[in-house]
Image (cartoon, rainbow, N blue to C red; front, top):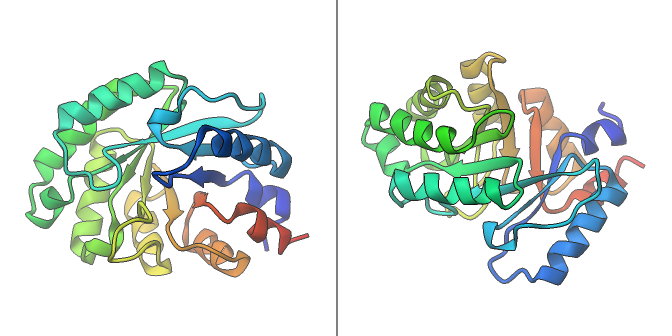
Length: 217
């Protein structure tokens, strides 16, 4: 079983509600410092945001649908980095995966990767609940080919659902430790968080971070 502090350092403490205010984002940043989470994840319009020295800043691009042109995602990502983001979670064009257009998907991810140069981190949201197993595997391989740092299950906004143990396990086996795996969407208790880690998740996107960590006190 993970300790409270170990789990906290795997958490992107997340607030992506469209109506989130600057005051709520500031409160999120303060809570992240108090809880000891690895980062906060906020909408790009909320950047820049002040955080404690040991809290990283993540944002999203192409969010939540992914259905915008690759060059727009790259521009959004570049602006996010300029505004202080250290990590960018991009949503893929899900149609490319559903249609088997994985060379185009690789090119899309690579365009955003260019806008998010190392040591900044690029996470690729594949919306796993909307894909079949073969599509999940191929999307993860596209992310690896484009030199992303993580594959991520979900936005948390898709009607098909969020993270599942099955998807996380499949993603982890596919990337084989060469990329991180972020589980997000619908993780609301410590048992589920633990199950995702056991399945291979190396990062967790949580909005219920405080409640989950308090279960481990």
